Amino acid sequence: MPLLLRSLAAALLLAGSAHAQDIPAEVPPASNFAPGSGRVWFSSCTFEAERYVSCKDAARPAIEAIAKPGDGTPGEALQAFVKKLFTDKGCTFDAPPESFRVNGIFLSFDSKAAHQIACQGQKADLVFKPGVIILLNTLYFVAGDPPQ
Image (cartoon, rainbow, N blue to C red; front, side, top):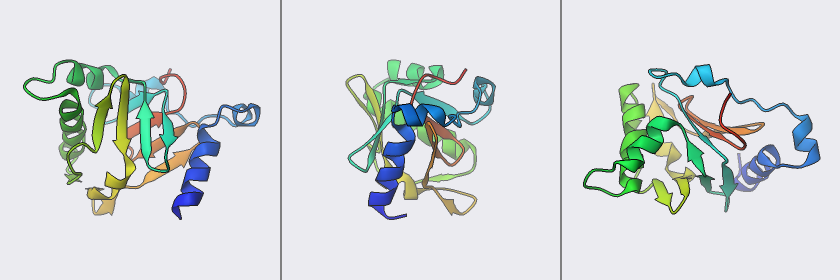
């Protein structure tokens, strides 16, 4: 999908307008994100500059990873956490450093790195659905509140 159309789709799907509220969000229930599921949610997310997904919150395992980054930065810890999610599934994760970052209170993903993640030969691409952006059925970037 051309970048402009993808950006427009993202804006429409994540918009908080009255019309967007009439479309039911396609966010899976919290039970889909149980430990061992291989899925993690991020919430209060926006798609910005036709490239970045920025979120204000995330599931506890992601927050714990960045809260205790060891010898690295919180951004490096977030990147390592996401890499492990994918490699534990047998996926390849060749995204460059800082594809996943922590910028102040925001957790960010540079979507240009998506194609450098692949599972079962399928290169990653962002899937835009009402209220959520999904990356390889693993990362769920939710526009609103965390899954219930």
